[in-house]
Image (cartoon, rainbow, N blue to C red; front, side):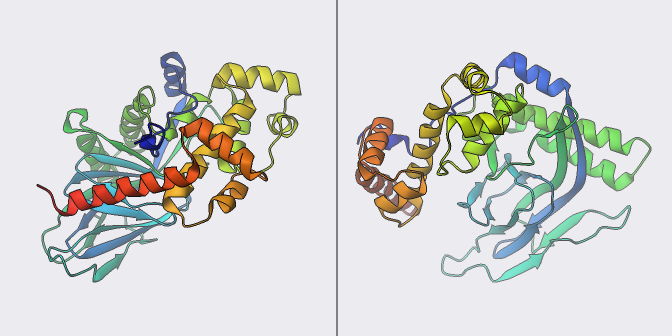
Length: 338
């Protein structure tokens, strides 16, 4: 298989935060819980959650299942999986039934449910012993005085931890604090949440997943604004002049600062963002190559084909075929393990 095609969805981040920058970010990080609950789901059941105007934090204590966010691929939940969901995102958590031929037949609506003071904050989906146990919450995390760290998040952050990090114990303590409502509850829960977020942000030093890019730019709000503008809509007709205006900088200052912070010129980054979106669409969508080319900002088919080949070492049609063959082979191996 072509090496480019073998990198499906594992392109390295375009920018990464340094250890010194991360220390600075953590020292200026302010956090607080909006809500925190325990979620229990039995086989054959689904728990509907989300829609809260704050990012969500979801940690799987035990069991196996999946989380499905509207508009995103399903996330496999293993013990110690941590998921950060975007604000206003609807999603559900479910556990497949024990029988291979039956589907999800029951669901519990957990959106907007209030909990009175002192009540055990718990959602239960199922009438048997739960197979999946999570702690789910919503929070605010701000950098400095004005930058909300996750307010512009548009896709989930997923990281796999282990028991050595004690994140499960930390979140259980936070949940108990919210139930007890003793003096200092706000300060205590904020401290516990910060411990969890520090564990996540430390991953940004080594993780190859794309969420780490947003933290690499925290030291320069102007460049972060322009980068986020490109990343949110890579197919738009961006130009250096327009991006400089978005960053509130002169053209020359923008070019110099962007290249210094990110390590690449803005148009090079834009091309990589476009190729990344195109690669994802080739695997997940049935759209034609020409349609995908237009969606990611190319009016010329030949220019798109050349840019894609330069990025992945193969043509889009071959990338799609090889990627789907790989996915089919993986599914068959999971269905028929040796």
